[in-house]
Image: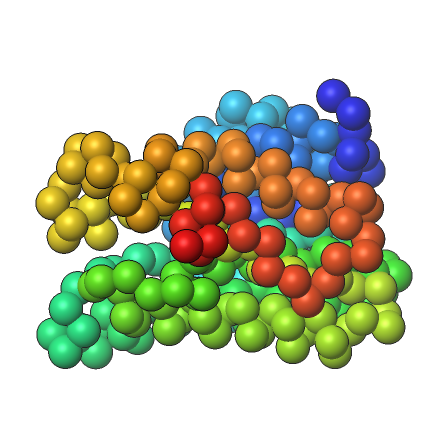
Length: 252
């Protein structure tokens, strides 16, 4: 371990599974203390159990600003500051666009867009007080290009791209960096419902080279390595950017 985040206090949302879990573990491996947040209390507790004393579990819905403010403030009280907020939690509720219910539209925007806004909004005052920090927001290749059955999801992820660029400009003189991380198709449960609309997960993986030229799904830990770079001082000149990790999907 190279301790690239030694002494850093971090928040990771969606830490109960997939990219969030892999990143929470990766941050801790590099010396960070991690507040692990997920709406699924059992899964996030399992992540913290795997990490040990460097992590703390919070069950919360990021669509509720009061809950986001509470776990952000509590992180500062518990760990003594805040250096990195990885706003990763999200939902993917695919379907035929004109059939999308108000509930699906509202939940997608409330979690993916507003939840990311809240994560940044409540982290920034603490980062300003501490002299800077790194905000990392999970968008998607679908914030850049569209796919069938994902119009609402893609709209939400596109908003995260522009949110991240705007925040970067607002705080670039004050030591706060903000970047978006755009994974391609990664082997994580958030994609499974979409896979069913495309013929099932087995079919998607058998034909994945038709849209993801690397010919396989990404592994959550591969995306965690990207988040680690954006969290660390190695990316000190990187802000307002979109780091795309998609096996060449958007290169076509």
